[in-house]
Length: 429
Image 1 (cartoon, rainbow, N blue to C red):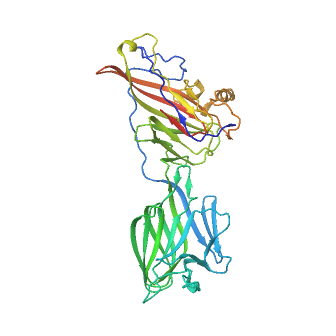
Image 2 (cartoon, one colour; image 1 turned 180 degrees about the vertical axis):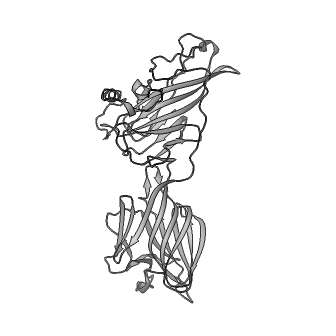
Image 3 (tube, one colour; image 1 turned 90 degrees about the vertical axis):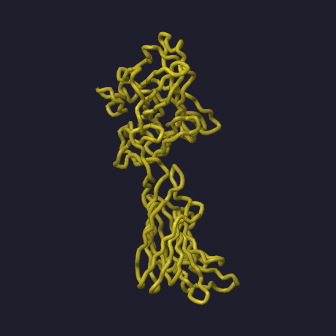
């Protein structure tokens, strides 16, 4: 069992070490490629862009209840136990979609009756509601006093993943026209409720129809301008704030704007992987900040190609025999009050490489190799720290550098190939 991490994993340069003309690394695995002064750091290959799909949130209704689902997360609602048709969430249910009724300055709620969703207008005088007979509809109220009813469908607080609240990229609304003709507006809103765009739609006859809206939004406000309609279902395509999604049948390599590349190698124990999002960025003076869900594929293996940048060297120290490039460190941070522990990354053992010298992880490891990797676990169990399954280990699989003269002496531009297995959020610097 391993410690459940909450804050991050760091790798950073220690105090500057010197570089000899021969660039010895020391303790090299036979599978590790040697360092040559003519090797330049790898460049940026491809940068993923756009929202990363997180599936669909679906709303469906039957005569006496509504159900919202997102994967295995479920939300249910029905009618109020008070006997009116106020849409009422089931006790203890999640909130994937918030359904809200509006009527100008008059207090309102979403209404639900016989499988249809509309607006329920409360009375401001203590009497019966103004639209009790039609609370499953969104209507204009007719002349001379239009009601300006609006129905809001917003992503709820439980529509989120490891990387934060989801965002909708498309919504298909199943509507029923109760009047002929009619018209309305679909107003897209962001997470703060600010208007993003407005789409006008209309109908010429009563009956079922669909409306599709696109963008990057957190809610849709349906505002009737003429006639009446009801909502009976919806599908929201939602996206994560993750940078990329691995183990989904597509490319399992991502390169960020800083030229750092991460590649998923599969699970070290050979188990089937479950799709998961990742985020790869910077954090303060850290060159690499990597996040994955802690509870998904805790045996996941990754290789990082990290262009650390340029390290200044003095001409005198750079020529000393036996000098080496500065080491890299990794820190599997523990939740407070535990203090972070920095580990110097060793060079990778032979069994993490294939016959051609490529860093491939545990794909060809024997039982003895597996036991050896378990023995290399960098974090010890600590009392009173939540535990989860997994090994936490990182090593350098290859190191390249280019040394050039600068205005003040010599400088080295360093790129590391780093193997990581662990269930933690990561931070390298």
